[in-house]
Image (cartoon, rainbow, N blue to C red; front, top):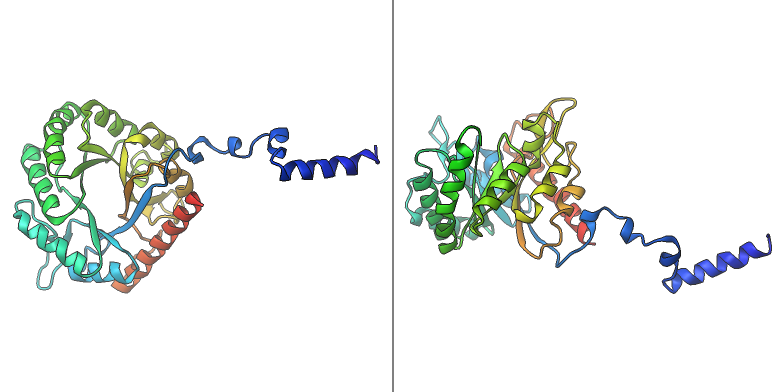
Length: 314
């Protein structure tokens, strides 16, 4: 037996070099989780920071901070405290003419930031939902913003209303070269996926928010399972993490309990351009006291996501 073992070892090494080792012992690729198998061209992940984390500061400071944190892309948040104002001023008022969005889009590009997404600021079931979302589509088209984000609750008859309204809005969005993306808010990706499938319009797709899934279900639904129910419909992400300890809190990517490698592996080879918009970049149990601290958190979030994307596409 001792005479045979060295010979067998050499054979195995030679077989491995010739590509036979995998046949003898099973393919390593075949043992990987299904979501990690490349099925097409790499997804063009566009890592953006929302202005939302800077909502207590002027929009100008938000844009400057995001640029200084190394981002090429930005998503417009909801409101910012401008000088002399006690309440937040809307980044883009719902009734603003499309020209105002065009001006803001150019303002971002002058700073070297490409705007990717804007909040609609209204739930689909709202009585003014059709009118406001139509106006948001026109604003987004004028500003060169690809995605209009909406969300809400599907309780009661709302789900039926969502389907009816999205069927009306889908053609409008497509005519303007804009996507309405729907994220879960008190729901799961499974629910939003079911709604988008029922609407069956290329102008309406899913935005996935893994942190919301953990938060609103109190950790009972695992986003890594949930995302698989709607992965083929996802066109963008609101990036936030979540952890249950030492505090039950949303936080920045990589600071919570969600495995972003496994999360994004589900959509890593779509060949599509896909915004990853950082909505929450905070550190658990710590409140940023100065805008410079937000800048640092924004940079950390970007660098983490860049590593994840590089690893998935390696």
